[in-house]
Length: 232
Image (cartoon, rainbow, N blue to C red; front, side, top):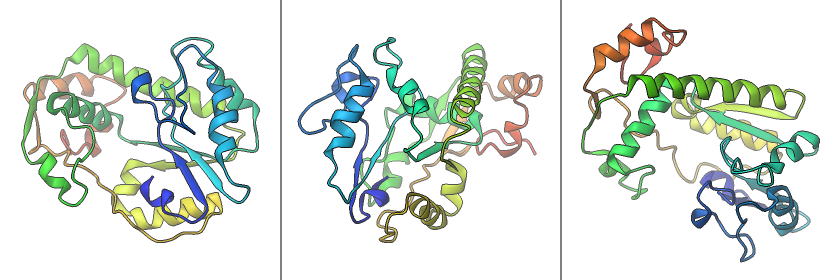
């Protein structure tokens, strides 16, 4: 996102629809209010903040604007439009996404605070005991959400990007994204921070129980490529 923000004639609004109203980014001095029309805010604040030659980009999570029907009108609005380019980004390995969330919750560190020495923020190993029932609920919920969102936008102008691809080849993915958006690529200004999700930095206290449950589920394939619980 920081690399895209550095592109000429490009403006990014990072999280104007954060699920916590107090954390929402302001647009022209205004914040989107819960129980208000997020579609109206998108059109009349976010998109209208552009100069005629600018490309506007907005970071929206799949779980944003789900507080009530009024807040959720942005989703139908986006489905109805064909003039907006969409980029979907998610982890290919949903197990690692869940484990990453657990590590962040336990450590209190969701993003690197020091962008130059970001590894310092992840220097201390974290131990967690995975709630098996909650893990399975989260995996099912994530899978269903991604499946339904993709179905909703299958006929739209859409580019899919995965966390894993960014971690392995961020410069190539940045070029793919800027080509797709038809904006000038100013080069990598900030390298992709892939975190430290390994079995050294995240220790699963009930590892055998987790592996056994996953092996009995439709999500067993995630164990093969997990950076924490890799079994093959």
